[in-house]
Amino acid sequence: MTAGEQEVRAILLTADAAAGEALAYSCTRRGLQVTLADPGRTGSLDADVVLVDLRSSGAARLPILSALSHARRRLIALTAAPGAVVGQDFDTWVSLDCSIDELCAAIRGTTKNRVQPPLATDGRSGLELLTPREREVMTLLLAGMRVEAIGAQLRIAASTVRTHLQNILAKLGMSSREEAAAWALNAGLAPAEIEGRGGR
Amino acid sequence: VSSRIVLVEPRRLLRDALTEALRDGYRLEVAATDGDAAATLLQIERTRASVVVVAATTQRDGLPKLCERLNGLVDPPPVLVLDGAGSDEMLLHAIESGAAGYVTGHGGLAGIVEAIHTIARGESVVPPAMLGTLLRGLIERQREAAEAAERLVTLTRRELEVLSLLVEGQDATRIAAVLVISPETARTHVQRVLRKLGVHSRLEAMTLVATTGLAERLDRMVERSVS
Image (cartoon, rainbow over all chains, first blue to last red; front, top):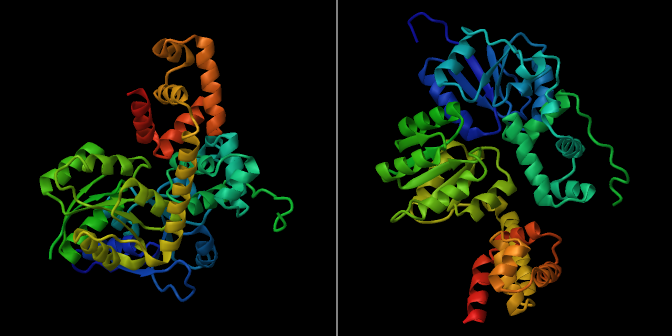
């Protein structure tokens, strides 16, 4: 940090405390003030910048995001796949494959990494990356079904369902089902309507 | 006690941040790689690492392959799987692949460091809250293997020979040639083997033998019946 430079205060929302602490440590050494918060928390988020780790559970972060998007803070998505920020109110995104210095530059606002998800620029949603069967698995996952139940519904082995899910994550460059589910919802995929739910 | 670790994490940002924080914040010696197996093995041998920490985002088959190759080393270091989000499935995958420990990111860096020191002492690490699910998963796998083994003993000597050739990927014509029988007879044997094992295809039979760890047992049975 050069003398006289104004310190930027950032909050990092993540469910992965270890990665969060490590990132905060590295950013702090570079003159930024980064503190950690759990994505489920509702308290005040007093900062100039809010970083959201999109690997964290989709359900937990949604209320926070809608609250934050109305505040005058810069919102940065930390993501493995830019496709995951489709339609969300982020000012910018930072790839998990970038360097710590690039992350710090994004927090300081010295880079203009505008949210322009590659998957969305050509008018496609990104859903076409998935095979029909993979989309089918996703809609059942979105309906809240577990792997075993999805297998039973599609008359395939649970291990086959897991393989489909692994392939989906690999295609999207994501690391959790929650992340993929949040992305699929944003991309316009609707949860399956399951008959006789709760009855079995 | 200081531990030397090799960190395998494909995501650069997390790899760099974890390396800095563990090295400078917790005084661990850290060599990091992006998960390339050859580079990782080299690092492990060169640094004489006491623990290998592998991120769960590493390619799915990367973990079992790494564990297997580590077993080829003299006095191999134990593997700790680091799963930021934490999932029962990844825990099962980690333990089945041969990892000595599994830790989530929920306990922060301190949790990871504690896990590293624990497995460096030769102990295992599994989050207590996940132990029940892990045991149920392992018991389920064992039950599947036991059931398959039961079906295996119903095969005749000839059928065992046919199955072992089938598992090698031989088709009926090749099987007939090897066993000096007619292709018709070979096909009949194949059909009967599939029915007895309760599978519908040769591929399924191969998968059953591979996933239930029956391959060695099959080899022994064939050897015994031949000699």
